[in-house]
Image (tube, rainbow, N blue to C red; front, top):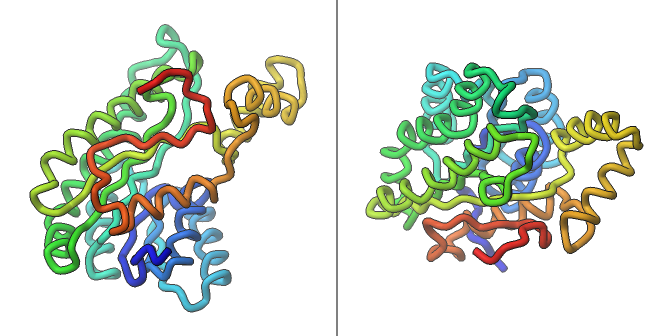
Length: 269
């Protein structure tokens, strides 16, 4: 199927590893022009180098950006307009898991992750709205995809801040979809679950040590007990869903949170 993504301008925050990196690969593979942003310059430069080697004919840009800082988001938005000529697809993907209880988490940690998961998407969507609306008027539509999580509807006990902020991001996506629809800017959320990313490797290293088992044993037990499919997803499997959601082929997909969880959610939504 031709997804009609050739020459689309795609901005991916959190694009230097894990799902974000797989998204960059996937969109470059479809002929899109990709801008990845991440706060860790060394990791960003390495990701960009690898992507350029893999897609020598592709158009890839990279910009260092801490999405919790308003000034850096403004610089990123300006860079996207000047480097790409505007954005057709914005993927607000930057984020990461947390580990705390409500009683031991200081306010600063709550505020930081609110900025990381929610306000970064709020701010960047506002900053890019005008340009995206103009491109939508020319090309039919523009798309914003916010990465939420299974934890928005089925929380994990050890990360209440992540659960709360991802739930808020899902609601923001719904509100934004109503507001931006008139401008042909289509907004939705995608909610991955158990995806074998560097973040999960870090979490599993800590949790397996706490339980006195090997890291692989922890991962295997978790997959078997949590997901009906009995395994973690690969970032590439998840990226395929983003490709379709961002494509004009999915033009009626708006205002929803699409879950990709391998049977890990135990309720009917």
